[in-house]
Image (tube, rainbow, N blue to C red; front, side, top):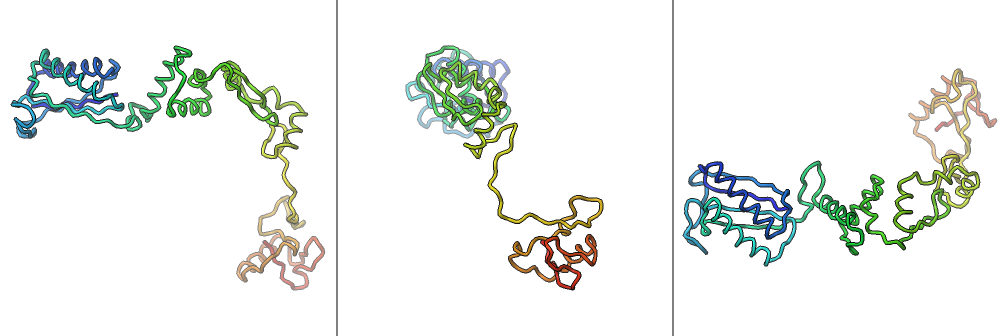
Length: 307
């Protein structure tokens, strides 16, 4: 995934620019094994005085045709490959557009693939992993090891998009997937084909409807729920809320209109809050309201605290 910036003096014809572009591309393909379709370049033309350089430092003499190639690569190619690339580049430039070897300046930098995104917000790491795994899928058994980036991408595709194509080439025939039998889709699945069938269907579609399975799930796995039953919950010790029976037209009055047993009152409410709650009780229950548990209410003038 090399990206090439070409800087040179303004005024060159289009054929010259095209020849320079083709020379650096062919050198990258030949010596750094870049894919032929991986061609991304920017050509920058500068006015006189915008290119500042020493004409004799570590080479030269340099002319006004001085041309700079800044190449950003996503892989470290090694010193030998780079040496071959430099020699091939100056040869092709001299044979094609006629650039003198002394006027060729090259600077290469390496950046991790995650610093690239070719399109759609996809990182270069994911793109490279997808390409490598697709190549492995076309030649089963050609690879025995995979990079962390490739494994992470394959698992993400499997769990995020239910696409098992990238992970299947990694699995051997004796691979075993074990899932607890307490789950509706539990069991053992051996080999890539069984693995693909498991993730290709709906987990639990054949088992979760059976009454015995649902019962075992409820009793043995409190964190597992079935589509036919609700998960069991421990009983709450908190007393149930008691609602005012005189609220008209509604089976569930507003939150301010119910009262709770005295055992649930842990600390007194501020005076302003108590006044608001008492007014709400009067509106919904009337001035003679009393609690459903038999304790005195508003009738004898005592304050009833509501929460």
